[in-house]
Length: 231
Image 1 (cartoon, rainbow, N blue to C red):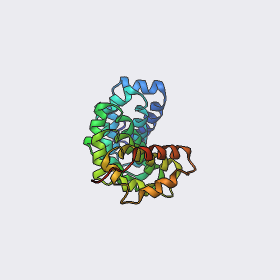
Image 2 (spheres, rainbow, N blue to C red):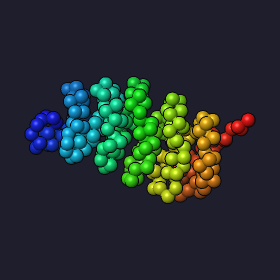
Image 3 (tube, helix red, strand yellow):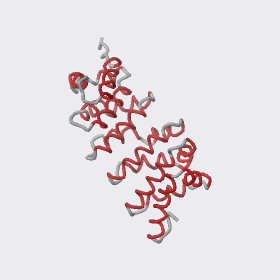
Image 4 (cartoon, rainbow, N blue to C red):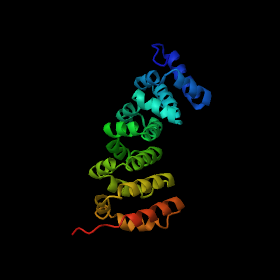
């Protein structure tokens, strides 16, 4: 029904699916009916309201491991990575949440990286909405626990982007950005990139940040972020 040609039908169907996915019984029914692939078709709907409900529904589906596997198998991961950059800003957070969740399983991580999620997340660090910036940094940081993602992030210039993101940002954005920096700068090249963008003095300032989590992240970063010799 979510792709029914009648607007009222597929609009109300998308709302019902989002509500169902928030409920344990509704989520079980979606998975038992193997409905994820059909629901995914709704991301191509011309109506923003329908797409918003579909994104919320599929995010809620990924609250469980079975839901994550179902979304990965249905191609949700690649579809979301391909669409998130050009989607309406208000709809991006649920897409990024879903990308983050589906990357927690091996095949999902492979799909996310294969679809180019690292440069997409780096691009979205500059988004106008703080919530989008936060989820982009959070997702990037999680992906960069994988070595191949670290390498991509360094090549794409993630370190200076994240350093810039730490300045005059809401607390949740700073938390996500410092976490991403910790993951990326566990490599020597990541550490080296801190200096040219003026990162060291600013990281020292964060030791006195109003957020204790930011302080802890920065302490951990300073410990693992000792810049290696160029010799």
